[in-house]
Image 1 (tube, rainbow, N blue to C red):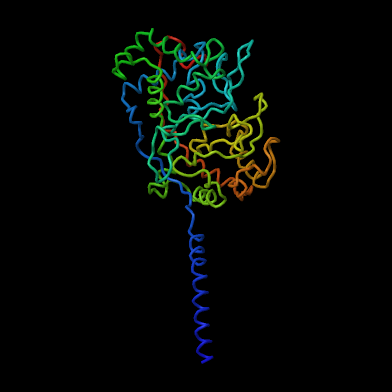
Image 2 (image 1 turned 135 degrees about the vertical axis):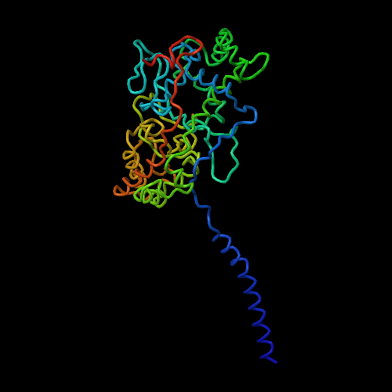
Length: 398
């Protein structure tokens, strides 16, 4: 009898323990679910256009003329091409840009004397492949939501195209307020018969010369500036001989040390904001903030830039702090070891991905050789012979 009771008690205890272990076992399985591994891809062969801004040859032609015409600037002295010139990969060889009230191109550009216009707040990013900004692997691409600028303050190329015109230090200058400059520019375009004709051909509206159509035309041209057939693209598409053995080794190191955590997808950017603590640029008069709210934890956060066409876009980082890719990698090695390069950004603020980097000097040459496979020199470098305003093409750059 006692033996039977003991057996029943043992069975009940085993059932109770089994029930207790069940949820724990399930929780372990959930925790063990593998995380998504970041990947990279070739760029698409085709560009996706917004539904409300389908492209056309007339729209692209108009946008190209507007891109090179200084009539868009307050003092009629600077154009979009001043800081995004095809000779420099649609970027420029300056750490931070010099906009209005200046002359020259790239590293030769200097302010006029006297001058009270500040430097532009950021390094000029290339317009090349901006048609793919925000593109992520295995996600439907929505060009209306494409992220723009170092601080991610605008969505879509259409909205981005208008922002430099409104900025004091870029194109507006002192002659007009931010609230009025776009209407001033539109009025100028309306008074030029050739632009009236070109806008009509591009948009076929009764009153086609508008602020909205100005942004749409420039964006349509910018989407023609693609460089999507680099040697790396060819390699990913199946040509195993498109890159060398050492470049393949560099690609493996790029993934192994952790660069791919932020530089992934077809554009080699996760298009997220990260705090790195890049050294300050002495030309900037205030703290080099990624967002305007200094109380925000992301005050020194900037968007991950693309790694494509780096050959044309030095100097690097949001404020042009580093002239070479070697210096960039040395900076990443420093911050992965909690070495502070910006007195305003403590190591505790560094992005977790950066702290996880395991980069050594001996690996840098191979990674740089891989990065060079992302260059593609086959892009439109043609420049209009003249613009409808009759002003100097590209602005005062000669």
